[in-house]
Length: 345
Image 1 (cartoon, rainbow, N blue to C red):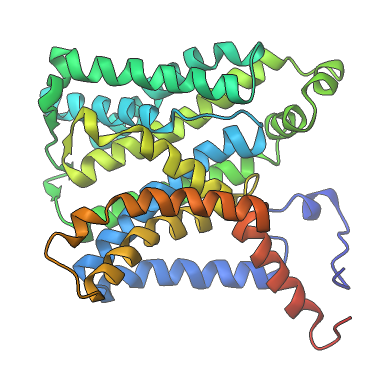
Image 2 (cartoon, helix red, strand yellow):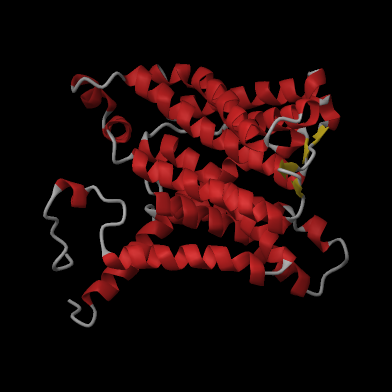
């Protein structure tokens, strides 16, 4: 282990950033995030906003699956609830974007609590199937309710800050990225509290947690609610970013995408949520680049589009076999190597 890392107080042990080095790197990262939009092209701003949305949603799924041990394949449906809530409020009432995002998160949270009710009796594959059933029901509602625009969906007016319309990637960057950062910090702090530790106890052994006095149903529903709240806010940001919401915007493959992200990044780790969402968002872009280099026909992109699904599946299987703790564990190994360098064993 690293020498000189002993803590002298409980406050120091519970600190989110417990060393000067960590605080320095966090400061450097904050500066880079501020400088980035002034130097990046429109394409990279688009990717940065998309990555931030995916990080926020993956963080929510990690709370549920990585920290509480409850498998869900309904993350896309909860994002859809948040996105449609934002779209309806913005289109028909023109309420402020902050209120819309909060409402989107709360509506998705309510949906998550309802979907989480079976979690006391079923777990594992059976719970995953119940979340898929909920996704199908939500998709049906999106496609048939008049307020959601049925199959044609809804167009979303741009978010407005005073008289300024947030209608470009540069302007949306200053909405999406700060919200994603705040959500990450909130989740990281959650697991320094009694609630977060109860989630971890349920994941490790739910029967033992109940014997210790943790009410399983309450905390499982709370985990579903918090995860869905994150998904709903991420869905609201998605609606503002793409400016149109349809039932096909949130398919089952999107839920698989987020499950793959936390597996690849590392379940039970906020760093894993970031690395997994970053990696899985950039993989399709890399595939597009590779396809563009290959001497194929003009329809090559359409022909090779199923390759993305195959790659997602291969990544899940590969990481489960060769690195079940994900990219976060790889990063921790690299850190340990340099902490002890040049005194290696």
